Image 1 (tube, rainbow, N blue to C red):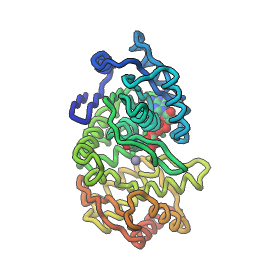
Image 2 (cartoon, rainbow, N blue to C red):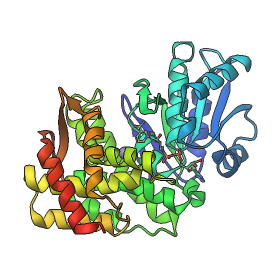
Image 3 (cartoon, rainbow, N blue to C red):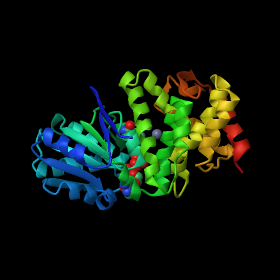
Length: 357
Ligand SMILES: NC(=O)c1ccc[n+]([C@@H]2O[C@H](COP(=O)([O-])OP(=O)(O)OC[C@H]3O[C@@H](n4cnc5c(N)ncnc54)[C@H](O)[C@@H]3O)[C@@H](O)[C@H]2O)c1
Ligand SMILES: [Zn+2]
């Protein structure tokens, strides 16, 4: 399945060769071309790109791989390198990497000289279906995620699924959590489609990526500024972010975002049954899909106060009350549900009683 979507905001291409990317670059002339990579995509992805563009004069910018590089310090280094290498307002920045490179590169480009063009070539599953889509850029600041950033669309999102060949399975699964989220928000048929996943064959992800992107694009197009329906994409993320923060604080090897979101979705499915209209049958389907692929994150009752504390500091809280995006059924969400501390306690207790030792 190939996708070429040309709309006002979105210009997304998924394909197996670099032909359309070549055409796009020829058509959209820029004064100079920069490619941002991290220390892994420099090894695994950049050579594949350069091989097809051997006649192009690309300047390579490299950052350390990993979330801790998504900082203002790195942005400053990159702005400096752009200046030093003569970038001007008509330069193009090509972000070749996972969500960290896309968020970082989008931020650097959208602020450099009040904004230069950038394109995303996402190389992780998470970036292909999520981070590269939707126009959010940014860096972490003072230990909090994505605090400084911009809303700015890439001129092109170019998805080349063969890059997944070198992505470690743990990172494939990380992206798959967002794939499950899109499927349960979209419709039952989408869930059937994603069950075709085979962790040992990147080819099994091609159609999954396309339908996941189509769904996210549809949601964002109807609500770019996140004042309404885009909030449904927060499903699993209020509790998921709290678990992610807890793990970052207490675990030597913290779990990944997707792993935390998977557990967040299990607990928010309990909440959906309690406070929204989700029935037991749909809840069972969602939870078993998640637990087929993700491990339980062991929580003890004494961590509940910490989790509640993280939730109160979440950006989805207004005047001290957390708002959740919950499911009424597979394919239908409600994104403005007020949830009390007691409700959260109850579903955390339920999770601990059912799954934790
Ligand atoms: N802007 C948004 O809307 C949005 C949405 C979701 C997530 N994000 C952000 O995305 C980031 C997470 O993205 P991620 O999971 O892609 O993390 P990441 O960019 O750190 O990539 C994960 C790891 O895989 C490596 N890698 C990437 N592609 C590879 C490939 N093809 N072969 C081998 N190794 C490869 C990276 O170097 C890194 O070590 C977070 O910072 C998160 O905040 C942003
Ligand atoms: Zn997420």
